[in-house]
Amino acid sequence: MRKTARYASLAATGLLALSSLTACANDAASTASSGSGSKGDGKGEKVKIMVGGLDKVIYLPAMLTQRLGYFDAEGLDVELLSEPAGVQAETALVSGQVQGAVGFYDHTLDLQVKGKSVESVVQFSHAPGEVEIVSDKAAGDVTSPKDFKGRKLGVTGLGSSTDFLTKYLAVKNGVQVNEFTPVAVGAGPTFIAALQKGAIDGGMTTDPTVATILDKKAGKILLDMRTPEGSQEALGGPYPSSSLYMQTDWVNGHKPTVQKLVNAFVKTLKWMSTHSADEIAAKMPADYSQGDKTLYAESIKSTLPMFTDDGVMPTNGPETVEKVLKAFNPNIKNAEVDLGKTFTTEFVEQAAKSAG
Image 1 (cartoon, rainbow, N blue to C red):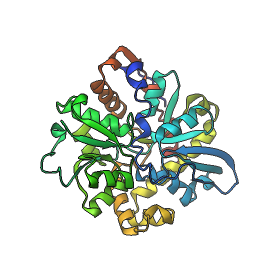
Image 2: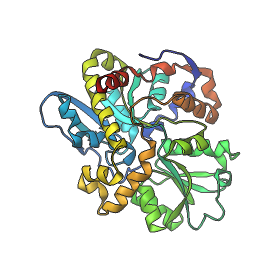
Image 3: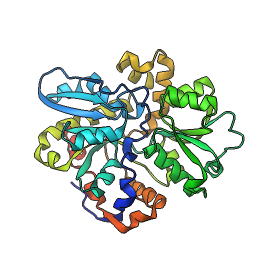
Image 4: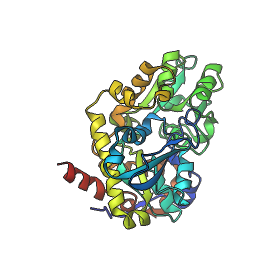
């Protein structure tokens, strides 16, 4: 059943500047290989999906579904493509290069303001999966976002989701956006090097970068938004992030295909909820562990709480995203977004019935 309620929301002027917001932490920009991907078995209906970083733990369900054979079981030949930035996945979707994109849900709000109708058809998560890290050197002085003033804070890229959420946390805690310096340092090795060399005092990133930083003792966790509880504390509610989103016209014209995709992803989310991080890691491509299987499994374990087990949009999730955007930029109050058109529960509801 498609949600249709209208809500006051985001001004175009506010969102246009945040076109890469849902790059979601373009967080493994240095670890995801642009253009790399995985093809299905060549049988069944062909579908291309662009992922904003296939080896990011926050997007793990995409490759895991392929590895578990669930796409094949649904009669689909899914080709997974990878770009390090979610905004590039968005571009590929809107231009028609692919039929679906795996990225942050808030892309759908951004695109609606720009006149594009895109919706999340299955929601992988109910938390951002982001972590605010502070360097060991600065840990004594930076104990909360209230201490961001005068600091250099790492983000994946200017205008990215990490940049946006960092600014939101600052403003929420009384620090204006012009009182600290966001520094684009990417993710993975480049983020870690910047932290170790003092180029940044802290920053926002995701696993496996977080696990590596902790393992190297290069920094400490300031805020952890990998869990619903962490999201509630930092953002005031569930924050739906990783999802499969598609153009609404394509969804309406290919419902049987979309249903098969959602069936496969829901099966994966269920599978994840009943298996350990070690078991999940064992199913993933060997190179995803970057030579340290134990650390990779640890990064999965830390991030698992962010995932849903049924693909359903969390209650009040869209409202939290809207509220966060409004708090950050007052101009968004001058426009409206129909949140009910940014996602649909039609396919996950059917998937649940079929499974039952």
